[in-house]
Amino acid sequence: MHDHEYEDECCVEVTEAAVGQETVDFTMKVYDPTEGFFGEMSTEEIKKAGKWIILVFYPADFTFVCPTELADLATKHEELAKMGFEVFSVSTDTEFAHLAWRNSEKLLENVRFKMAADTTGQISRYFGVYDEETGLALRGTFIINPDGVLVSKEVNFYNVGRNADELVRKCQANVYLRANPNEACPAKWTPGGKTLTPSEKLVGNVYESYNEMP
Picture 1: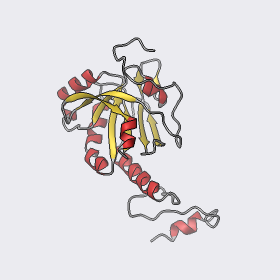
Picture 2: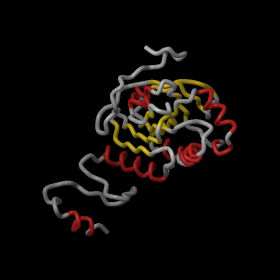
Picture 3: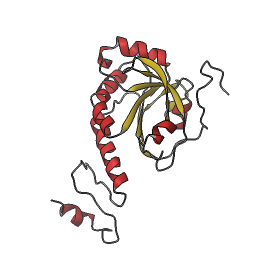
């Protein structure tokens, strides 16, 4: 199907993933900075392990905003892993370029999450972040729950970096709501904070309910 050297790379249909819907299974080649070797990630295997998936797409290795984002994400990697998240940075570079970039850019010295290679742009297209004019991925962050459902999507243009603190907060909220599906997390919710329970009594009365929260 593809004329490139990664003949065993899993292919997905070019239809865009939708929030609230189950994603297709796919694999990507990766460079693993923790183990120091090349390997492969499989969403099917991660789901079988009961884990969440975070995909952090970025335009390219050896660029400017990108290492600041990955360095920021690295500061939250351990916390996310403890919550059951597998974290992957993704660009259209090869896993070999990932290794060279990670080992040469000082900002990336604490990166321990796997760096995935979407060399055909196929996964980037599936998640709606592939720029056909440049062959690069926009800054997209996606959270997939252990059932394979896409529960969060954020996409920025090339020149706006993301904030890993907000990613952690969204992950905390999604973990909580998976365990408490009848509740909803209000704006700026953090663990331990009050939630809302949608019902007919709450319609038109969110102000009263929200301001009763201690």
